[in-house]
Structure formats: C-alpha cells, structure tokens
Image (cartoon, rainbow over all chains, first blue to last red; front, side):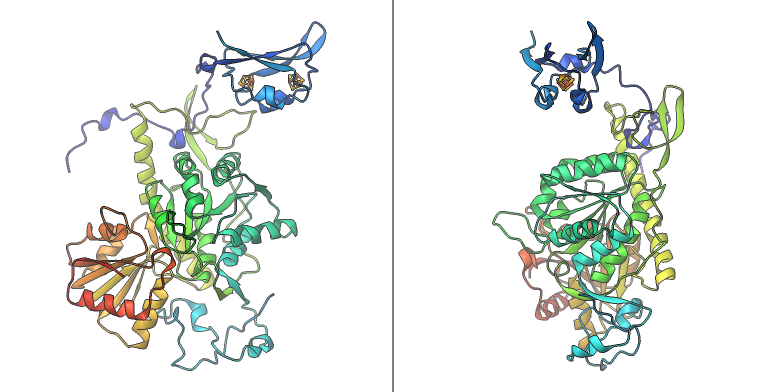
Length: 96
Length: 435
Ligand code: SF4
Ligand code: SF4
C-alpha cells in the first residue's frame, strides 16, 4: 500500500459535520434577490417568526406597537414569511 | 385475524419440507413449523407460550417497528411497501404505538422529516421502494452523512420504464453507495428479527449509520408466513441520543447530539475541499465497525431468542462438503435450499449475503476458500457492466465464477432455473447468463 504522507496533516473533524459553533459568520443576507418588507398592517402575531428558516425575524416594540422586524443581514429572501402571514402584512419587493 | 400455532409437535412428515426449511437447525422456528393441509387444525391447536402469528412480511416489519418504539414515523405509500406503513398507521391510530405519524407529500419529504426528527433526539422509521426511493435519493446521502441512525424498510421493487411494480433489487442496489447499511432478508421472521437488530446496529456508538432492511417485494412483503411475534422485548432499549466529540468555540467537546434552540448546534455543516474527504473516510470506518457490531448484535439476539441467520453478515448452507457454491441474497434462497434438500444435492452449497453493505469481504473469502467454482444469482443488472453483486464478489476471489441475472421485474425463479445454474457452475462457466 502506498504510504499516506498526508497523515499528519489530516484535519480533525466531528462526525456528521456536527458543530457547536456559531454560524453567524455565514451572512445569508447576500443571497437575497427578493426583499420582504413588513408593513404597518402587521399585528405582531409572531407566526412568521416560527416559520422563518433563518430565524431572523423578531417581534419588537415599534412606536409602542408589537411588530415583526427582519434582520436583513441574514434574511435570504425566501418569502416564506409573506406566504404564512395570516393578514398579508408582508409585501415582496425586488432587491436592488 | 390472529392465529396461534404451537411451538412443539410438528405434524409434518419428513418429505413435506417447505422452501424455507432445513436451515441446518439454526432457525428454531423453522423446525417447529407446522405444515398441514387441514387448516382447521391450526385454529384448534393449543396455545403455547411461544406465540406465532400468520402474517405478511410487511406486517412482520410493522410489528417489529412497534416493539422498537419509534417516536416519529414519516411515510408516503408506494406498492409493494404500503402495507408496512398502513399497519403502522393502524397501530398509531389504535393507541398501540405512541408515535407521531406524519403523512407527508412525498418520499423526499418522508426522509427529510425523519432526518429532522431523528436530529431532535428521537427514534424514527420510514419505508419505501422503487420510484419512491429514487425520489428520496438526495436525502439518503444526507441521513448517512449526518450519521443519523434512521431505520427504513424497503420492499424491493423494479424501477420504470417500462412500468413494473414487482420485485427486483434495482432500487436499493442503486443506493449501495449512499452510506446506508443494507441488510437483505430471506423470510418474514428474519425481517421481524432484523428490524430489532437494525435499530441496535444503527445506534451503536461505533457505527451511527442509517440501516435499510430489505425484503423482496411481494415475495416477502405480501406472503403470509408463521412469524414468532414477540409480545414485548428489552432487546431494543428506549432511544438515547448519541454523545460525540464536536468542534466548538472552546475546542472539541463531548455533547449529546440533540437539536435544541437552547443549545444550538449545526448538523451536516459546510465542508470545504480541505475537510470533505475526511467525512467520507469516517463513514468508511463506521461501516467497517458495523461489521463487528452486526455480528455481535446478531449473536446477542440469537442467544436471547434462539433464532440466528449465519453470522449476521452471511449465512452458509450445505457448504460443508460442497465443491461449488451459489451466492445470492433474499427470498430466492428458499427455493435454492428447497432444491438442495429435496434432491439431496451434495456438491453445491449456498452462500447467502445478508449484509450487502458493509460488504462481508473476509467472510465471503473464507466461505469460498475450498470450493472450485461459484456463481452469483442476482435480481439486478447494471447495464454496461452486468451483475452488480457478481462483480463485487468476483473482485474478492480468483475462483472461476458465473454471473446469473434473473428474477427481474418479478419474474419467477423456478427450480429448473436453479438446476440450470448449478450445472453451469459445475462446468466452471464464467459468462453472464439471463435466467
Ligand atoms: S424572506 Fe425568508 S429569510 Fe427573510 S425574513 Fe422572510 S422567512 Fe425569513
Ligand atoms: S405573521 Fe404577519 S402579522 Fe404576524 S407578525 Fe408576522 S408579519 Fe406580523
């Protein structure tokens, strides 16, 4: 068998590609071609928060009212929030 | 309907041997099997402590899954697998099995749901075959790559086109490189026993790989056989999520692999060219570990319940004085054993591969050591190469071997076919033959 000279250089891995590290470095916002915008209709019900695959929506107090706020650093523009919003409070814009 | 058979006092005469019988005394239930034309005798037999039910292969799998206590079952129907998940749906609806039953919109989603559920730290099950498995393809690799010990039943069926719903191994053979352990069963009882063992193998800390338990579609999935269905078991314990060393901000540390928002982890992370290969190497090592685990777990099962299948990886039959061997898998072994037994054939033995992945290289080499020539019968063809199993076996031995491809799309493999194969093996034929 040929000797594997790379042996010493082998990187250590955790099986299954499982890590307990943060993935915050992966700024998925750069993927976005559509941009969801939460309008004033928003009732702050939080449905979109549950469905957002990036976990980048938070309910915050905006001008004394509960409202969904999107973190565009990570929002990848999948528009799931718009489709699940029961009162169609999220509108779709084209990312410039 | 439930029929109880006694475990003692067979009223079978010596000549009345069923196709699956005479397994050199290894399979306890076979010895005790009752073969009688008078079915009323079945109903009037006294109930013994050793309970048998006459059930389909599909239901044997469902019964074993129930005993293994999965918490999530995600499934989409496809013939001839459907009876497995239908039975499980019945069990969940009837309160016999405490599990979440997800009726998903496709097999792709079924596997995705199992992956997600298993990652949260629960045991899962799904079943599929043919086009369903083809549709699941992408996710098969994800489950194996994320090292999730999912167990899946497969009722092997041909792939289109032309459309065919009957048995061959085209579906799971295509997935042989997906990183799943593949165990092929000969009888409904073996399917039952193998499901219980499969959870133990998959979840073994040196393995952590998903397992396919394969039965021949219709030949096993829809055929009624007496199966010793355990009322309860402690062979498969309640699920414990694996604890492994993972990379973290404080270096490598051991954690329980459970998706939980309170302690976030990432699974199946992005791996650059610098790292990706190591993950495949780790899967290969796990597969080699699985060979040991399969044998150990099989032996433990055999000790506990008195039923064994060779050494768990391969089973040999009539090989003691054989000069020739036929190598194959699955239910067709019953026909071959029947012929050997009935015609008192001494010179040809049978080697049944039970574990196709991991491939039982050294076990096969040992079994083939003293024979002069062999043949491999398989229900799959890789167009452009020929027999898949044949080429894998042939790569591990320099004995002359014949390749037999047959039984495709559910074609019957008759005793005459087996005789013809034996004759070709005896003359050390080395060609491809369509049976
Ligand atoms: S578009 Fe997608 S990623 Fe962005 S906020 Fe909505 S659901 Fe989340
Ligand atoms: S689902 Fe709609 S209404 Fe509810 S918080 Fe989200 S945007 Fe607002």
